[in-house]
Image (cartoon, rainbow, N blue to C red; front, side, top):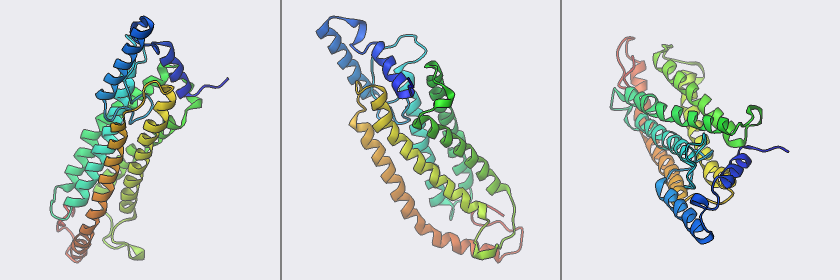
Length: 269
């Protein structure tokens, strides 16, 4: 019989206190479990965002290798990293590159120095959760597969960003391109990562945690509303920021007409 991660997690939760704290009498145990679930719901707006273990609260699991607290931590860190910090870094680049010569360093600081530790730590916690359940590596579920893809794309994007900034290419390119092809790739890959991250968090909130907990600890509606709000706010702000492309293209056109070695308004030479 084949179990996926959600099946194993559901069985684990049910066998470690599904009836309430301490296995007390019928009414008392139910009240204890409900109180803990309520505490968990209040504790994490973004809990469950990363999916694999986040979401509502639940019974205390003591010093067991796996705990719902670790699952919520994994979800919270990944959600903050992918849904708040990375989009913030993108918006800083979109809105400030035409007037702030240090826009790149501000952008890079958020995408790597601030976001990186949260994303890598959250991913590592999720990896340990899967290992604690002795989940077979060759039978990853959808959420885990997307998590691996997201981390790989994130690291690739960081490397590509450094390359775009440091590599020097001719100022003109065939086909009427305003800049090197890898510049366009960097932008498109960044937006693709944010779109995939939005789906990943949605999968965790609506599917993974519900399936994993057997419906015992529903994700608070506040968390789902927060997910929707973050997605809408980012894409609306990004779309509005495209108005700066007119000024950006004008600056780049003027820069190409200047002698080589003169710094551009965008902080590059």
